[in-house]
Length: 240
Image 1 (cartoon, rainbow, N blue to C red):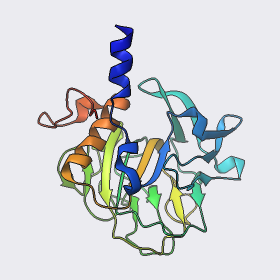
Image 2 (image 1 turned 45 degrees about the vertical axis):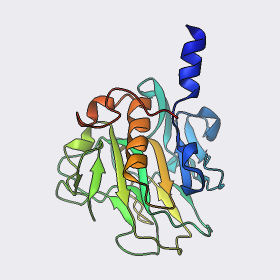
Image 3 (image 1 turned 90 degrees about the horizontal axis):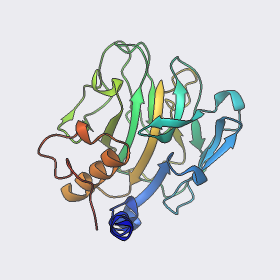
């Protein structure tokens, strides 16, 4: 039985299978990639092999590392009220992702009372970000795929519980900076809630790869019940 279980685990599909398409991979479940300053996170190591680690030198602005945050796995917690927490990287070259995937949840007011940033790229364009839209229930810009369903601009109430997301960005080679958990350079527009995993791709995935990523994230983080009934990985995770 042990051999069969181990063999099954070894055959699970992971983002490593995406090869050179993988631009960034931040995984809170991998404790070896989370550098702590006591109970807060000073650096989150990029698992893609591209060295795009994000960090925060100011202790008061570091997210909290919560060990049993989701499905028994650790997460990075931005708290339940507006703050200035963020992890960022500057001086990047050749960073031009066209789609982000990830797992997060939102613990703030409904409707939104501010622009709360999940992912943003400063100094590129006003729509090069994933943030909530102040004073309503939508994302600020564009349509997003939540929990493997159809694309929609609506965020609440879906994101008030842990969710899997996918979102497109226009390809742009001028991204020298990234913020995780804050709206560009705006202090006080940080995410309210938790972030479990962030994956960025250099190329638009096929439908099959999009669904594999959704299945991988949903089963890993205990969110398979969120997937539509006709999703190919509703009942089991993708394998290789």
